[in-house]
Image 1 (cartoon, helix red, strand yellow):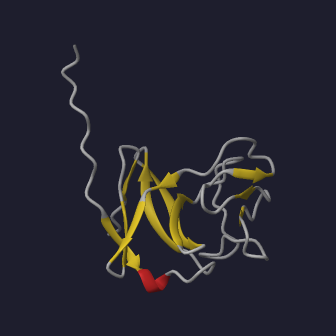
Image 2 (image 1 turned 45 degrees about the horizontal axis):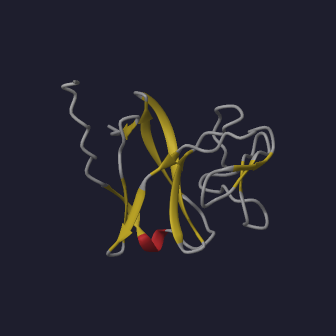
Length: 131
């Protein structure tokens, strides 16, 4: 029998005001540590839902935005990597086309309540505090 205790979920951290995320608009970008390494992430509103992912293409680990906060294709239907053209479903992060195969984006848990968006750090993705 293992003495290991299940890890309690971490408290949510404020990310941005709900009004900062317009439907299929510019994403809110933020810094995290993934496996203790600096990384960037983004949150956007799509079909009324707020979703968040690491800003890292599944094909080659590079940032995907066209310009800061711009992740959606020209028709604002999919998240598209500006470097490789890999295409992802905004609600699931699943790859739908391109060199990413069956690999999808790394999801970050978010919650929207009382006019604020919060994100939940995980065992693998922690807050990066800037000086």
